[in-house]
Image (cartoon, rainbow, N blue to C red; front, side, top):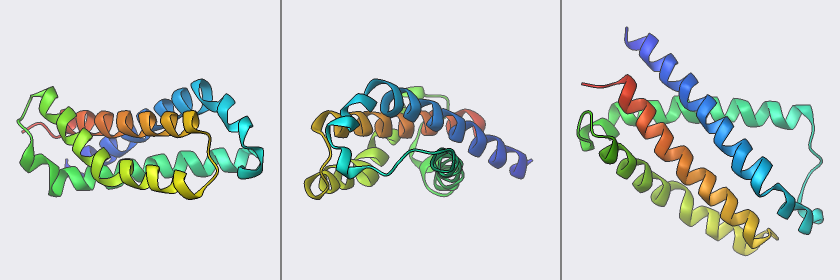
Length: 136
């Protein structure tokens, strides 16, 4: 049963992450990429495939993190507790590095805002999904 839960959690988180990133980065904030054309590689089927595979890797790694560490710091069945875990993970793992990379790479400020929003929501969704699948 553990393997089934792990795979289910990784897939669900990967799908959620792909949808969140598509909506915020690919739909709402994509137009701001055009303001810095020299920064971006051409988009292709291959880049979308790699991005989707990385979303599933994120799902597997976050599930592993949740099982080993995160589940010890949340209240079972409490969605706000899982949201707080997602916010802490975002602050620790993405916020600082996202801001830091925008200092050195020529990203539009609105695009950076979109990537940070997507990242924050991805961590919160991952924590909620893992919590639902691994409810004690």
